[in-house]
Length: 71
Image 1 (cartoon, helix red, strand yellow):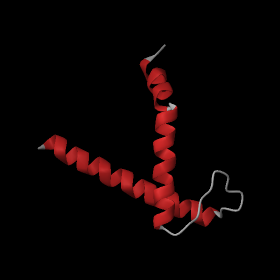
Image 2: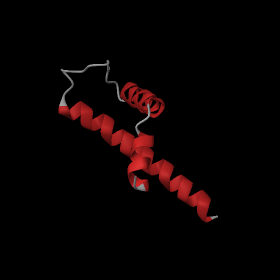
Image 3: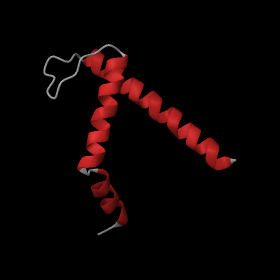
Image 4: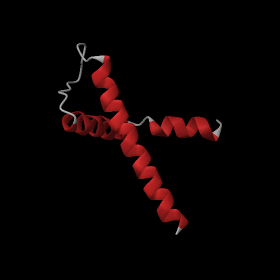
């Protein structure tokens, strides 16, 4: 099996999904959006706000990590 496929399978473990869900829930709480396990009434705008904030956090974390690795 190619390494990139193995990495994708490793990424999809239940532990990481749990962390991802927890992170998403924290972000949703920060922007004032109530999430449940199933969100049929979630508006696209609200989903975008959550996704945008998650992206901001991930970019900040990546920049921080890159900065530490370059020192």
